[in-house]
Length: 213
Image (tube, rainbow, N blue to C red; front, side, top):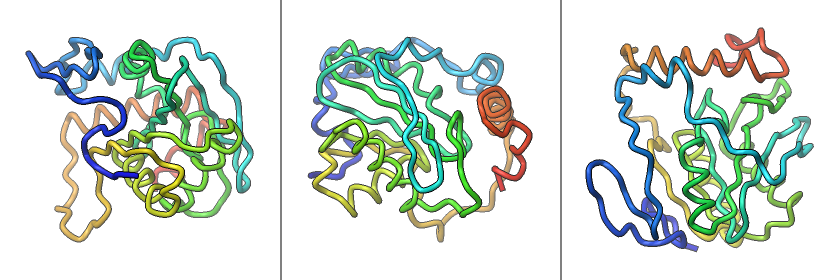
């Protein structure tokens, strides 16, 4: 198992033109939304209809998941305060390239529930492993954004036999060098989108403030 910030086991990046990467024939959509104006208003592209979806019960939480396509499994892990719907642009590209793409709403996020215990990356990693067990996936590649990236790296470190590769971005495993947070207009729009999604999908829609602390 190799941990890298390149998408190992998923194919080599072939080229880059006009802001679009090609990954074994995969091309991203031409979406430019640097200030997150469209994201705040509409969110990411809707997820396609899943081939399989449901809940996995693990450690006092019901974890929502969905699977798309067939082939080698790739699990996409969203960032903190987000949800699986943030991967709406990536799922079709992976499926069209011949992969089985899976998303999981982290505990307390999206459609998934949580208990009163605090979050930890080890805890979130155990949730991913539980979903893999429920779906009889002995091994998968992981794609992680922010908290999802940290979760992917922790799971790969703790159970390397379960992880064929990790692509991680916006990852912050060691916060000692982090500058003081400054809320920009783009960050505010992102948070507003997360609030809207939480209210729409969460089993506890009135608890975003408590959830986000």
